[in-house]
Length: 227
Ligand SMILES: Cc1cc2nc3c(=O)[nH]c(=O)nc-3n(C[C@H](O)[C@H](O)[C@H](O)COP(=O)(O)O)c2cc1C
Image (cartoon, rainbow, N blue to C red):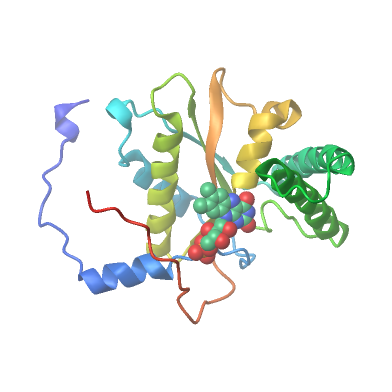
């Protein structure tokens, strides 16, 4: 790194803990967005936030693909749905030969794949995009797999971006479905066009939210062992 770029830290930013906790709790997954585009300058600010997220051994391996073009989003979403449609059909086939009474994790997983398939095909039949939820911007965080912590690096970067985005009036949702499909379905991986050896590790959709949440959600207490 160039020593010239090590700017003085300046006055430390101090948040009220209660305010910051409310900021964390006010982060919710948004899947309804205004049709307003996100200015390029704002997207660049999001990318800048990712730049300062930590990475294992400071490898700085995270790269981002920004998708705004409606046609590109459509291609990636359609291929993801194709993957879940195929996987769901195979799961339904496997379930037919399984004893109904066995509530094993394997069976539950197959049932989930069938549910994904049915929900996605139903959403698509009414013109709804079940992968990107009509969001104006998709951010795909990818990294070479050969770094020690590719997933952690990308997830920490996307989490940092998702929180920072809120300061700019944007809201987001993680899209694990795209990540699963990209990992498992070569036609989708090819359409994304990753550099050799890279894998998508975290995906965010973002945009200006159409709806406001009025209540915080409750959550189960974290199980803790004070060791
Ligand atoms: C790793 C991860 C993957 C997710 N994948 C999806 C997804 O593919 N599609 C979606 O609509 N929401 C997805 N979500 C959003 C979760 O459903 C959501 O975070 C959860 O229901 C809690 O709600 P909240 O984010 O509003 O607090 C994902 C969240 C996480 C953390």
